[in-house]
Length: 192
Image (tube, rainbow, N blue to C red; front, side, top):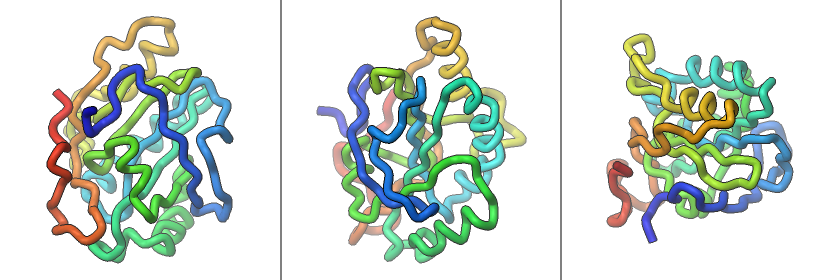
């Protein structure tokens, strides 16, 4: 089995607390399309592309697309990634997505999250139709020339086959508990 979910695999279930004080499971969402993305508070690639992500969420939410951010980073690597700091960040920025906390990192492992940010798009049957990056330059989004996430959503919502199903996510690696900040699991590798 590959580290990261493969196209057409089912979305792994989760039950995680959110910054809004509620607990959510995958079954709580009935939107046509679900975008699960692994993110965090401190990563310059996340921070550099947050407003592009906001724009994408605002563009596609009315079309039946739900965005769910998950932070799996160990706060022992970066205190900024702690749950209280997640709450603070959402209060400060008012991002239009749910922000869930994967304290055990179990969900990051189930999805095979490689980097922050790393996006997974699931259809109405919760089968994976796209995974990878949103844009090609998340650290400096003003220099970005392609939005692979929006292209995949456009294809799917138009009833077409997603042209580009897999890209390599660009960002910081997930900060795994008890590991060096640049460590990645041995079976984690580029997707393409």
